[in-house]
Image 1 (spheres, each protein chain N blue to C red):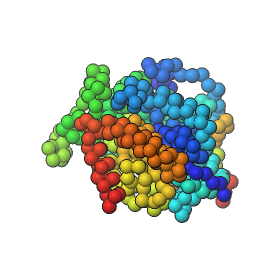
Image 2 (image 1 turned 60 degrees about the vertical axis):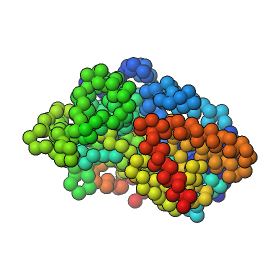
Image 3 (image 1 turned 135 degrees about the vertical axis):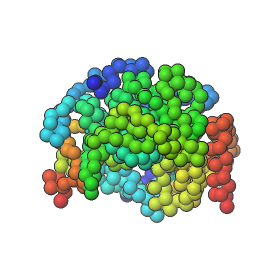
Image 4 (image 1 turned 30 degrees about the horizontal axis):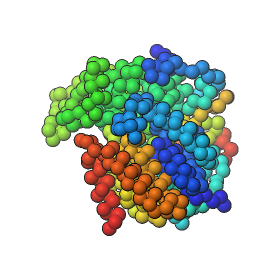
Amino acid sequence: MIQREVVVVGAGPAGLCASIEARRKGAEVLLIDENSRPGGQLFKQIHKFFGSKDHKAGIRGINIGTQLLKDAQQLNIETWLGCEVCGIFDENELWVVCNRDRSVRVKAERIILATGAMENSVNFPGWTLPGVMGAGAAQTMINLHRVKPGDNILMVGSGNVGVIVSYQLLQAGCNVVGIVEAAPQLGGYGVHTAKVRRAGVPFYTSHTVKKAEGVDHVRSATVVKLDPAWNQIEGSEFTVSVDTICIAAGLTPLAELAFASGCEPVYSPVLGGMVPLHDDHMHTSVSSIYIAGDISGVEEASTAMEEGRLAGLSASHSLGYVDKDKFQKEFSQAVGRLNVLRSGLFGQKRLKAKEEIFTKKKG
Amino acid sequence: MEKRITDHPVLGPLEDVKKVTIFVDGELLEAREGEMIAAALFANGRQYLRKTVKRHEPRGIYCAIGRCTDCVMMVNGVPNVRTCITEVQEGMDIRTQDGLGDWSDGETV
């Protein structure tokens, strides 16, 4: 059996940062990802990030991804791509299927799960038709694969994902016919929302999609107004001709692997649903398992990177690679940076939700 | 209308890469080397990827990152291949999957 000190599952922003941090501290690291290329969802983020200089504000996600890959390469971090972690046995033995034809078992002293999140759906009649997809899926198609999902697109959801992807669809040459938002107010950061509005895209607050129609592909969407109790108002329907409907209705942490490994779950609606219970060191209820990024609660790429560093630092400290003073110093610096990201109108709710989880973990 | 984004205000012009030939339900199509099957199909105007098990309803991509499995197709005789995260290969045989697919052409019985 193969043995490694730290195995990181998922090579997105959190997993890459965790690997880099643990390797820099001296631990032997194996990074595993099921995709043929590392970077997770960073390479479709072509907009500039928020935050301070510490958080690479003003730099496009795609460039941050390139830098992280360079760092990982310079540190000679062992990386297995095309490899799926299918299970974890006895808290530290990973079952990995590589390239869909070879089973490998890896014994790890510490495991950091950075498996990310997946998009939610909104289940109106017709939502399963080809042409109805997650907003992130459309973003992947245009920015990574350079293919338009359609020409006339309706966006459902005005949060950051909804407005950022709408703008990027315009950049890709698509027509965004409108953004539908069930809540009475818009949900995204002002700067992104304003860019889309300036481009002439109409917003429909207190509206939702009643149905999508088409035979083998979506051809139209019927939009309906909602009353203050979110009931559809009969007679307020209007139909738009579209070939694509993008759904930006939030994300759910991908925590199956953690739960199947015995990590205790906790429910946090603010953070996207069920997440593994964890402390501020990103340590779960299973002694060998740490988590980082969206699996620990859906936030942003910048918080995922900080959490990754924190998990890498904590795991290498627990293996004896970092002395107590250095650990304390770097730990409080990382927490400080995270708190900056979790401030403001949107961030405060997430900070509170995180703190509730940390408190619960303490018991 | 052209589906490929040949020029982009942030990403620049689309890089020239080698082309490969794939067969989709018997039809010969051109794909870019290294791209995902679903991307090649979208570029060729095909978004109907499979039919559901019971009602044979059409399905396309939903998440495009390998999680939802809505995009699975028969690839080289093997059913349930996630086309959004599987790269095209020269001469690949890709078929619309009906229900759970058919293993009879595959390597495993």
